[in-house]
Length: 145
Length: 99
Image (cartoon, rainbow over all chains, first blue to last red; front, side, top):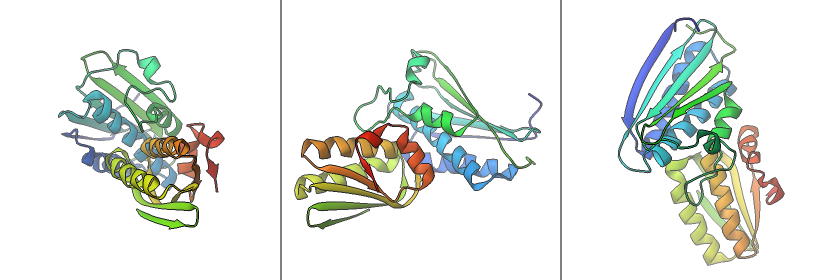
């Protein structure tokens, strides 16, 4: 992939109250590519899933930080990485199965499925006690500046 | 959110954003209403929901489980196409009614 033409970084405490802000700021950044309303919503939803996973699973509601860095590329692709330094995932393939969850009631187990539905590519790098990095890639129909 | 009870049904009008952060409060209020009113039908109205991620699906799944345990049918209404797409990923269309 070519060099990014724009990028930003942010990190915040892994508090659930920050979920809305983080998904909104990533969606706003993608706005630099003149996306459709649908594309903005897709990114907002996918980022929300990844951030929630970091809070609920990565840190298991303990204190930590969520690290996001995002970049825009000349081919109008947005790449967003959501990283945590939490407990990591022992079996990534299993974790990405639809409806599979290690959390309790009211967790649907659809986080990764939603991410895959609304982006072009989802990459997950994780290991026990080594944290997790989720990279979301989406091609935007507009032109990135 | 607003809860209204009429005849044999209880309608929960959801609004704003449904994510992990605010789903807990929605869950508590809905469950309290369900156990108090013991309706035959629980209607979850998503018409005023501006954003939903899979936490919204978890909310529906959890309410369906509790409602079923007291012989109450679960109905979902007012879903925008995107939110319906997310909910359908759960396969719940076999268990709940979409209006």
